Image: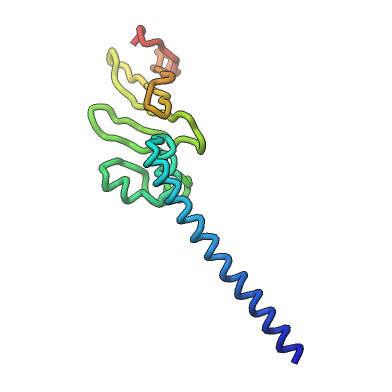
Length: 151
């Protein structure tokens, strides 16, 4: 009789353990969704961008919205959507913000005086410009930082 009681107790422990694993993953899934919703409602742009680009979960929705992103395989390999691209007169690329970041980077390449110019902007959570960087290849083929007045 005690053997059956022991087996029953072990079955209960095993059942609870097996139940805990999917419960943990379900909790994480819904917590991420609620965190994104809260950030969107608070108008926290960088936090929303970080959640959208942190995994491939929203990749199909981002593509439907008209943005260009890497293939699903590349997203799974990298673990993030990098870069998010916006087609237009300028081909903008947005890097994913780090978790709890206060800013993010936007970059593109354009032609200035028949030279390819790499431009990077760092924007804060209100999309205000914090810093900018411009570089061009010199005659030796090395990229060098230039000032706005030089371009």
